[in-house]
Image 1 (tube, rainbow, N blue to C red):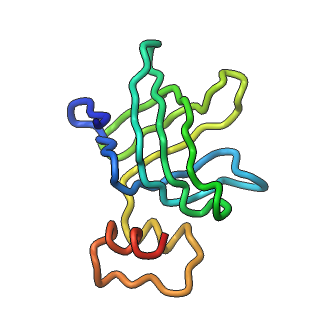
Image 2: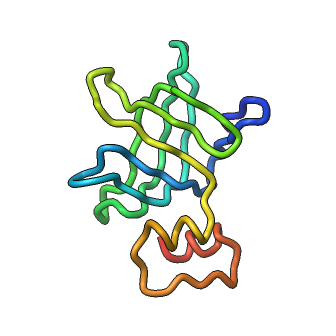
Length: 124
């Protein structure tokens, strides 16, 4: 199953995406590659349930299933508000590439000689 809406970003199960959450877990935003393993559109207006592997979160607790309200959905990214309604967190989900990875994730070496999906599967 996938989340598809015309010429907008498509979320495919088994694919990696960029994740930026505001506010993060301390000062500033939180960045991580995520790999989607579950997607469900809920009956309520603009709500989705997304299951994903959060690569930069603590080892052993990287699997998340969250309900989110879609606020903005365009070709390159999706802005969601994490639920419940009382939450002050929003996230930006987008396509991932080596440039995003190098700017937002601290790693020893990022080898761009392989497809980004293969690199992420190998290292996360």
